[in-house]
Image (tube, rainbow, N blue to C red; front, side, top):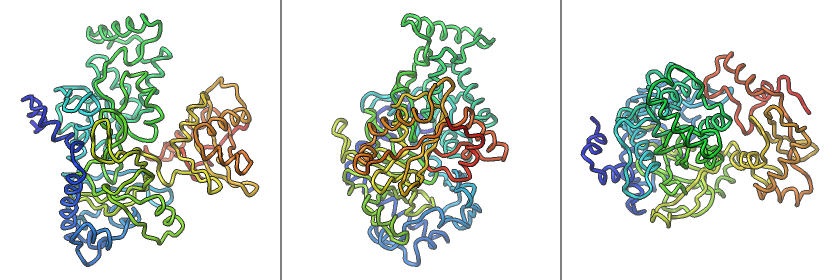
Length: 534
């Protein structure tokens, strides 16, 4: 029995809260002392490894200040030749497991990331804390219970979401639907379907995964296709009772049953660009607001919202945190050899920053520039009296489109504009293109059947939505006197054909869909096969 389960069995909820959510009660001085202590421990580990000495040089930094002064900022390219070969002999500590994320087209298939035992354990600890925060309404409230059920909606190892599920399963007495071992043998759609069949019988308490998955399931229910057609599984008394209650509740409101009529979830945890886009729809379908977190493969789970669902707070014990101010980002963009200056967590002000982090607990990534931008929305949370900076995910740096050096378009605000247009679309991608000496945002969008629009009309609708949602885009038209949007309607099934082709070529799960922002020429060539302009 794990430490958490023992505390839970004994009803020691104050200790549970302090262990998993107590970081929200830290003062800034307490937070920075944790950061400094763990960084100095990490520097000793790095100094005793070949890669650590390669990254830091011949002199071991003795302080935070010296570390930031003498150690250069790194990217994944600095680790090639070692991590892509899974060279364990050069690392500060022997990995417990390896994880990977998507690589870079034409350079490397995956970015491989070593996880020490402590880093792996931290993944589960953070999930436990997030489950507590997602299901509470006030400080100190712990609603986790033995045998709570969780829909298995994450990718299997070696994806970090798979490691996260396994680490959580080892530390917490919960039940994944389906089990991790069974789910690993299934394709994603099959895993989700099997999970919901089990949830009909055993209930559903928590979800963590991608918000768009929950919205897609909710839409199926709303349209009367929520997978509630007759099967022998439905004859189980528990399933019948759950369905009857849900249908009665819905019919009293003269509507099809929604997931919230079938299940009363304790908490929903999600992350990614689509969270802010779909959070209200998630609440509509599932009855709870999703708690947003931030994670990346190289750094693990790093930040999470509190129970008021406002800004995220970074965890102090996962990575040493630095931030590149926006003015320094611009200098770095203009001169790739420039080493941008950083600020620490206690030096943040409201504005846009790029994250730089150093792994704790024997990890290898050192002053690592992951390429993610955050907006600091406040220096503290006044409502909950959290005395730490509050942030929200802004954009992936390389997924922004700059028009005429004037308007910066992020995936998030472009997605918001498309959603606000009320167009009945399936998927989209966007690129920056130059024509007639001007820069354009070219949106390639696949509509659902029966939409009744041509490309010109769709462009008009989207242009107005962009002007409403993105001030810089509106100002661009007014100041430079041109409409910077082009729209191409893709053939129905274009994205499905793309995925089928990628799978036929043996593409990994992460590469079966093109990125929303700035797909490569090769990706566009595949997507545009059979393109039809209207």
